[in-house]
Image (cartoon, rainbow, N blue to C red; front, side, top):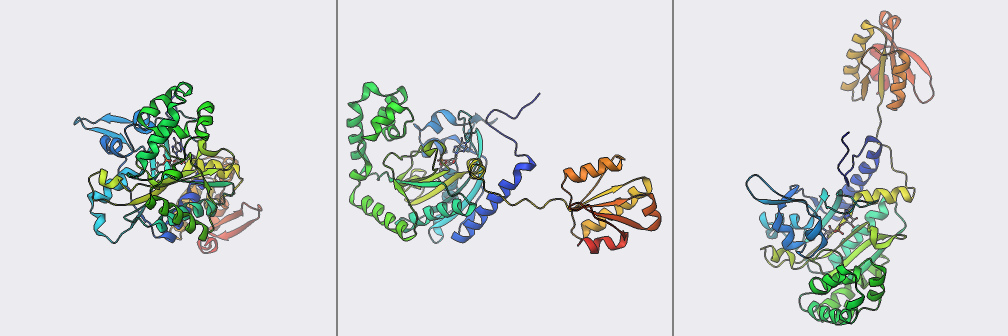
Length: 415
Ligand code: HAM
């Protein structure tokens, strides 16, 4: 028996109201903040991700779905949304438009992660990017948009974690302070952290091993090593967040798992579980577009995992609106009634009413069961007597009240 591939799932009709609810909130918040939709292909040249997400990140080292196509090109299923948007920005000359260019997307994302609750091999992200602006006011706006997006969904038990990772000028000084500190604990580090100490020291700070977490607690903080410009940027951002009334926690261990970040990084986390199950995260990436061959272009963005949002909506007991259900099921008995049912379905659909007619000559009882299972608002019943009289029985499924109407009256009545 075939099963969906490990770490992937089907989104059955019963789950769809959550997805429609979130998609609507995405469209609403994007409109409110002036973001326009972009869709990029499901796969890209592999090197786009190794050059941007970073050669030494878990994503590039362990999690990409990479394959050679029949022409021998190495392609990779999108493991995140930011590099493709930057590629599109450069490719289509969006730098010539008034800046910043504000774009959003909803996209499947593929990561060969260890599947568990909230962690999948295919998941969906809503993400947005503001490209072409260095002003910390835009950092505040991007964070404000993320915060209000979750709040508009009805999520209350969330926190905002904030940090600055500095820039090309000040980061080397911080990294060497971090390395000096960690070198004195080299013998106590987990194997992954021993490699991180060599290749990607910033990631030492967010290791999940309890013994490494203890060491990280007293590690030097980036905030103490920021250059004047980064320090001012970070202070301004905090001032603006205060103006916008957004509560945040400074978290010196928040570094995020992607290599391109500069200055601002942030995450929205559920109150109880914290970083292991971040609801979304983002930050500034002022060097990325230049690194991909574009002009120097400051930018920042954010992305949220939709499945994790749904898990948290359920956990917090947020009721989502039901999607409009079926309006009418037409049940009938006998061949002559079937002809009437087919004609009536057409008339009702032309009047904009959703209709299902049963098929296969089922008993009336089976047809009523089908109406219940499809949650039809009304059932129209046509039997042999009704055909002769040119009428039909209209049954209100909410209260089981029935009335007999001329077939020709039904469309107007149901409208
Ligand atoms: P990220 O933190 O890697 O950031 O992913 C964003 C969000 O996607 C996470 O916070 C989480 O909610 C969700 N997510 C990630 N991996 C999985 C998974 N395996 N299963 C389910 N959900 C997952 C980025 O991808 C950046 N591109 C965000 C960004 C945009 N930075 C700047 N602009």
